[in-house]
Image (tube, rainbow, N blue to C red; front, side, top):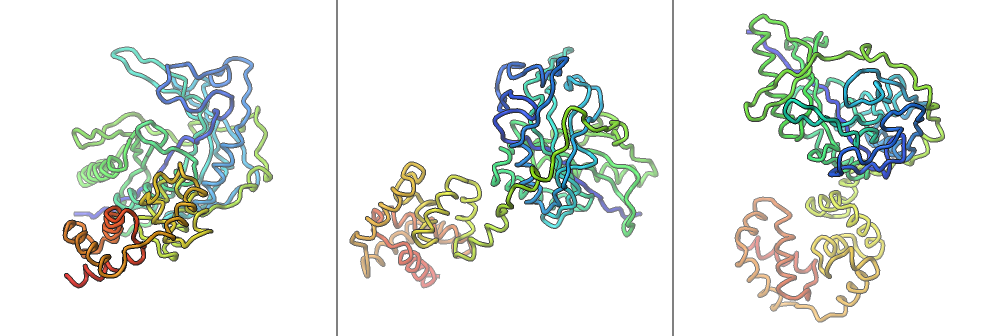
Length: 425
């Protein structure tokens, strides 16, 4: 029996978090709004309406392209992607093809082909025999990220997408919410004989999948489907397929188009984006770089995850660590030692910290007795810590701080917790 190996490439679309749409002044935050209430002559493509690019969306696309290790083009051109579908009022989509904003990148070990900016389409609502069109979404800025077909393992695909989403949220490029449709995942899947280097002469696009887990399952299911066909000597049709999670199979949707089907040509109503606009954004630290920096400061993986997920808390940490030790600042913020950090602000947090320094702390035998009680009262957390979960130690420290009304120096509390746990085990 012939052995086959998967060839997987990704196409990811994410709506850009901006106040207005890509080429008009309509609001970009339209989720939950009444259909067709966030529209104007531009996003409805009425005669005589002309597009004006949203520069904030361009800048955020540049930021993402840099985070993905891409080369930023010195001159980027919008183009018309021509196809006819009810959710596309102009009969074409303003997109980019020949000169995307970013190209030839590298992220999480995968090659990035391109990062380009375009406008979103409208939304079709199927109600029985009738299909309705809501144009609220039409014209929202949309970034497309395309990888080379370098993946062979569905699980690696899932890890790549999760880290990409972390970057989208960290850089405030997108809400990246799959339930609301601001992040959409597509995978191109084909099979070749093991050992072959040439790409297969077909690919099947898996589309309209709304979770990382479903995409991984869909890719696995599609690999098995294609393998069965090839082993029977049948040809795999190039097409777009969806994922039926109830049946656990992919289902055919439509024939897959090629680039030439779209008849791209330069958008005559929008001048090219110049080097001044495209190169102006400074490169910011990626989540991967922040993990390395914060680990070097002695922060636990749990604390780092909290800061990556909560930008407001991360900003407070950056300011607070200028004034007090980084580990102390992280403990104050993550464990809310003095209350809600965002309400207190930097001045309130520092005032509470300096007031705490003047407290009478629990020391010596009293501290050991209080700590032993916490260890005895929380056997599950102690077990987690001895099994290697560092976050469990921070939980125990939090319990100790709570029991003693904050009269514990965190470093001393952490150290005596370790000593008692290690002595018991």
